Amino acid sequence: MTWIESISRAKAAGRLKTLYEKYQRPNGTIANIYSAHSLRPHILEGHAALYRAVLGHTGNVLALWYLEAVGLYVSVLNQCTYCIDHHTYAGGLAYAGKPEAWSAIADALMGDRLEEVFDGKELALLGYVRALTLTPAALTAESIETLRAAGASDGEILEVNQVTGYFAYANRVVLGLGVTLDGETR
Image (cartoon, rainbow, N blue to C red):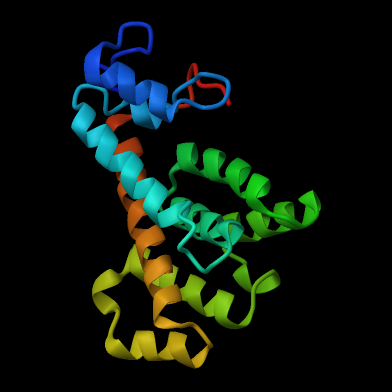
């Protein structure tokens, strides 16, 4: 599950037990990325709050499936197989179209062939995601102007920026602590 100690749901007490109850899946399980924070429940709480704010908040304008695609792409660029697995699945759940259409999107993201399924604003924003993930210091004010010219509003740019930043964080939690899918069920 992780390279460091983690407290199982069965052994959780106090604040951690309360958080596990709050963040459990419908089947009663806890994602291993969450249990990786179990030694510091306050960090688990912060992680979950950030995740919910940037990805699942009703105040977001961009579609959830697109934000999932952003997260999947960041995870692909960072080679984080745990997050790739989770968000290939989650993106498929969020996508309102036909399942085979989401499969084509996920395949294009994993193969870094974005232009096969994206164009216009969506493609421009994914170019920004790539730069922000791999070469963030190379971004400039002109980078943002290019996104605006493609039709992205500043609020949409902010949403993509925050989802990218969240996934960069989550990927590093997973990769840095050796979080695996072992024992995890959806």
